[in-house]
Image (cartoon, rainbow, N blue to C red; front, side, top):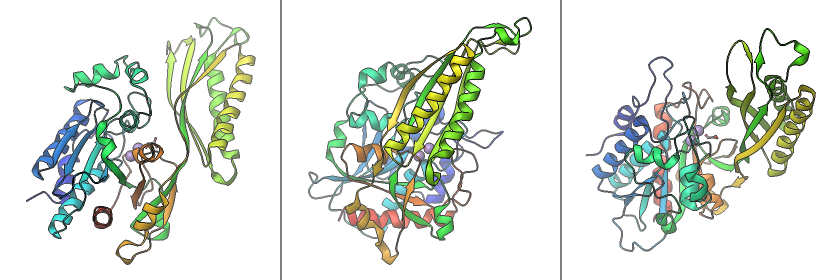
Amino acid sequence: MSETFEQMWSSVAPVGRSGSSGGYFRQPFTSAERECHEWFVEQCTARGLTIERDGNGNTVGWWEPVVDRNLPRVLTGSHLDSVLDGGAYDGPLGIVSAFAAMDLLVERGFEPGRTIGIAAFAEEEGSRFSIACLGSRLAVGAVSPERAVALTDRDGVRLDDAMAAAGLEPQLGRSAWLDSVGCYLELHVEQGRDLVHREIPVGLASMIWPHGRYRFDFTGAANHAGATSMADRRDPMLTYAMTALAANKQARLVAGDAGRATFGRLEVSPNATNAVPDRVTGWLDARCESDEALVELVAAIEKQGRERAERDGTTLAVTAESVSPAVHFDLELSARLAHLGGTDRPAIATAAGHDAGVLATSGIPSAMLFVRNPTGVSHSPAEYADLADCLAGVEVLADALAELAR
Ligand code: GLV
Ligand code: MN
Ligand code: MN
C-alpha cells in the first residue's frame, strides 16, 4: 500500500528546512536535495516504477503496465531543489501530487494505454549554478555540455565536481529518455493570487513571461573609507545603487504592470566596512510580458547604469547568464484539460519560470496546472497551499493523466 499524499508530504517536509526561518535550503547536489531525490527513488520503487537516471542529475520513474511501450509517453513531475530560504511547495508539490495521482489511477482501476513517467528535474531554480532550469535545459540540449561544465557555484565548485561529490556520475548533455516523451504536464503551486481572486482551487497556465538573469559587474578603485575625499572616489557601489533604482523605475514604466526587475543577489569586494569597494557584482532578474519588452527593459537599465558609471569613474560590464523566451503552452493540450471533470478551468499567465517552459520550447507539447496559494507568496517560507486544494490538484492531475494516457 503506497503512502497517502499527507504521509508523503510529511516525510519530505522536514528535509532541508531551517530551524530559524522555517525556509528550505535544498541546493542542487547538496545532502538535503539528494535526500529528496533518494526519497523520490524510494517512492518509485514502492510503486514498481522503472527508474532511469540521466547524466544531468534528473531522475524519472516510468509506470509501464501497457501493451504498446512504443507509443509516445506521458510525462509529469517537477523539481525538488529550492531557492535559498525557499518555500515547501515550489517543486515538491508537483512531485508528491504526481505520485498521489498515479495511486488514484491505480485505485480507480485505470489501465494506461501509454507509459506515464514522473520526473524530478535537477537545479530548476538555478540557485547554485546561475542558469534557470539547468537540468531540463541540459536534457533537451538547450545548454551545451561545454558551457555547463564550465559553470561554478559561489565557492568555485564546478557543476560536474558537485555532481560527483554527491555520488552521481555526470554525463552532461541531451537525455535520450526525452525522445520518448509525447507530452509533459507539470502541477505547481500558484505564485500569485489569481486563483484566490477567482475562488477556484486549480487552474491552468496559459503562458510564461520571457525572463532572464543578467550579471552586472561594476568596477572602480578600492581605497580608504576615511582618507579618500568624496571627490576622489571611484566607487562602484554608487553605480550599483543608482542602477538598482533605475531598474525599479524602468520596470514600473512598462505599461500594464507587465515588467519586473530585481537585484536580489550581490557580491562586494573586498566587502569591508572601512574600504571603498573595487568591485560590486549584482545579478538582475528581469521579466516582461513580451520578448521585445524584455530586451527594451534590460537595455534601458544598462543604459542608465553606464551613464552613471561615467559620472562615477567606474565601469559596467553586463553578461546575460540565462534568458528564457516567452512560452505559450500547447493550446490543444490545454483545451483537453480545461473542462475535465465538468469544471471550467481558467488559464493564467505566469511570470515564474518552469521546466515545463523549457520542454515546451524544445517542441514537447506541454501544459501546467496551478494549485491555489492563499498567501500568493513564493520563494519564501510563507509559500502555502491548503491540504484540500492540494488534494483537488491531485484529482485534476489524475483526470488529466487519464485523459492523456488513455
Ligand atoms: C523560478 O521559479 C523562477 O521563476 O525563477
Ligand atoms: Mn518551481
Ligand atoms: Mn521557483
